[in-house]
Amino acid sequence: MPPKRLLIFLAVFAFIVGWTIFSPIMDRMMLESKNLTGSLSTSPYGYKALSELLERVQEQPVSLWEHSVMNLPLGQPHTIWFIEPGPGLFIESEAYANRMRTVAEQGHHLVFVLNRRTMKFNPLKPTQPVLGHLKDWYGLDLATENTDLPDLKTVSVKDALPSRDIAELGFLPTEMRQQGKVRQPTHYFNDPVMLNFKPMELPSEQVLLRTENGSPLLVHIPYGKGRITVFPNSFFFQNAQLTHDDNAALAVAIQELTPDQPILFEVYSTGIRNNKDILTYLATGKGFAFMLTCGLMLLALCIWIARRPMKVQYTGKASDERHFTQAHFINALSRHYVMSKDWQGLSRKMLKPLQARLDQLYPGRTLQEQMKAVAENPYYPLSLEALQAVFEPRTISSEAAFIEYSKHVLAVKGKLDAHDSHRTVSRYGAGVTNRR
Image 1 (cartoon, rainbow, N blue to C red):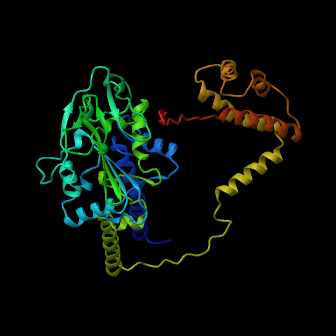
Image 2: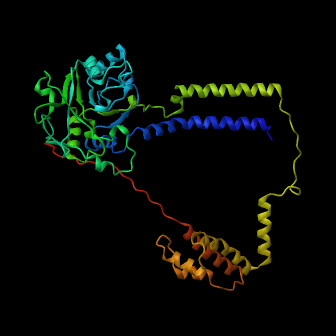
Image 3: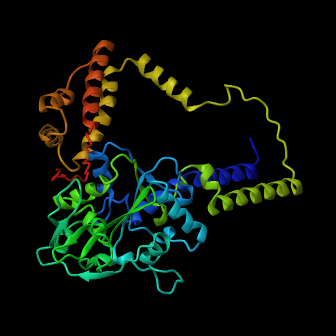
């Protein structure tokens, strides 16, 4: 038997290795559960339904982009949705700014779907607002102003979209949304405030959506071989809001501006990273800490063995006469029962587990009440007659009769132990109408 210290070391080492292997999966699950407003979230405030909507109505593939924009391949243009992008997208670097320009110039369609909550970052941090970055990157001189949502929560709009007719955008009242069991983020306790762009000197063909009074809502400009689209009211595309036909139609209309391009949803800036495998994970800070821990543990084991060498123990081979196992005991007991031919006693022993199961299901009741309760329960495919046939007194005097009775008892207990489980899968869907 290996020394105790070696077993302890191997147990601790196996725990650390196992923890590290599963850490990428656990980290991702934690990020997805906390990120209630991301492209992976199925909460009323998330945008999972938007990706599923585009996947359903578009022929192009829809996938997540879990890497930096610096790693985005330029050969195949994509339509990239930046849904409420996080600070990880807006990096203060001239090389990064040039990369963002190159991505658009090479034919990508960049769709920035913003929210008033994330239009400005923490003022204590030396970083400029989102619109400031768009101005530096693409020369878009945009400014927004508030527009209160009416009591009916619908906004009449005028569109110039080539593939859809958008008449009004809808928002479900907060009271209806709070009835759900999903934990609400503090920034959504109040109804969102709609934003529109201030009047700008843009060609009319670059403003694809306006309010009734003519204020721009959706800006779409060409940039090199690509395009830039900015919409500052992402809450219209949330899971709970896509049931409104024109909300869904607007999202599809934006995608149909470049219908031949595959679709990406950028999630890297919000913290969702592609660290799902152990090799990628080892390249992170946590992975380096794991490798350092393993090295220190191996060094400690080597020092321990050098200072206190392991003793070798020699043991003789144990004979079967002096060491009996549980298997020997069970075989001896079964042979005893068969040789005794006490079929009546054996049948009573066969019945004890079934009786224990009934006592577990319906404690404190008589046997007759227990059998009746099982027969009346729709989840158990057993009749009262079948149960009574098992428990009624009988004389078993032969091995054949005992075998037949045993099969009947085991069949009844198997049906009693069987249970069905079902689950309900809820998917968000949205009808998209108004196709020209």
